[in-house]
Figure 1 (tube, rainbow, N blue to C red):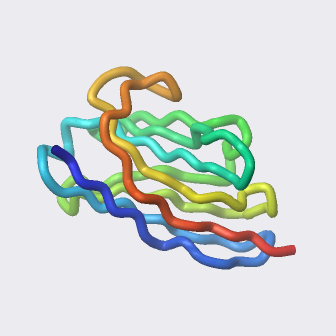
Figure 2 (figure 1 turned 120 degrees about the vertical axis):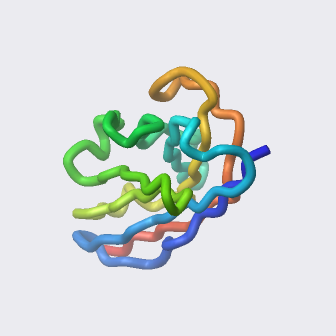
Length: 122
């Protein structure tokens, strides 16, 4: 079992930045590829980014490429999502997830956090 807890969300003006964290506990964190997803009100959950177990490979949704950066620190059992140049359309609940196999949006995500709210104002 893997427990995931997100933090770092909040209210920020358009053009601003936030750094989300996802701390894990339970089974070996370093064995999982880790992803971030988001869900805006009235919309389906969408893939944001994924990072492989070593932290050397990443993949982003086109909508956030060049503005968001995913990273991980296996010594701290934590992954991060740096959100820069935020837009109002980035407003959503952001979730981290652990994938036991696969890559990208279609990876097998076995564990999910509870989410953290990001609100971008004009």
